[in-house]
Image (tube, rainbow, N blue to C red):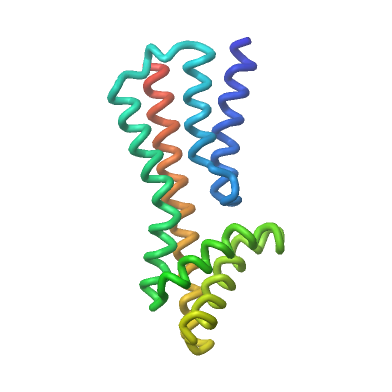
Length: 161
């Protein structure tokens, strides 16, 4: 049963990393679920209050990372809240409309259209803001990947130390 339990826990972690590329998958929840499953399968004994505090802070940080990175990328390139919302919608819809490349094209088109329609920006400014949304998304993927690795690393440290 040990092997099966660890396969299930590992699958939760892997799905969490897939969620970095497909934002419709709530990656942090799968990482957290893997930790909870370990506790259910084995024991919560190795997890003290400090462990849970750190993990919950990581969860909050991960939920915030997408929005913050997107907002910073768009604002840095002169965008507005409309661009942030357009990019977010494009990020969620893009991969379904255009598989694989939609993850990058979706936020660009969403921010571009939102800035053009809502704030009547010229095409060059809207394209620059769209590029900012892609830069924000890519930086959030790297940031979230590092945070998820830290979560899993801390989990493994708590379990095996």
